[in-house]
Image (cartoon, rainbow, N blue to C red; front, side):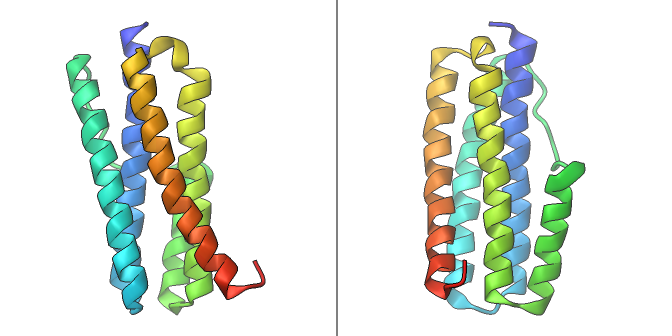
Length: 152
């Protein structure tokens, strides 16, 4: 295990959880639908829990915890689209943007497991697998809401 590589991998997951927290905080402020507000609060809680676990591990490795969110590439544009969708308060557009963001979170977790696994301890890998499963539950919930709207 290379400590710096492990810290970088864990910090990429800290950042994606920061993205989720910020995105769903924005979504919660913008939507007027009580069920979505409740759902987004649950998603924020999931990411806060994941982030706390990751921060603990980065700190234990002697690393500096990543702050902020990703502001580059497709993910940033997706969250900008997310904010635009919210301004129209269109449930389907909001959920489509959430689904896109959730796919990016999934990809980040997959990347950590596939490309950084050799740098992580067994405990780190188990934590990441468990967090990925929690995020999958959130993603599946978004998909079921979209399916209920039809035309997805």
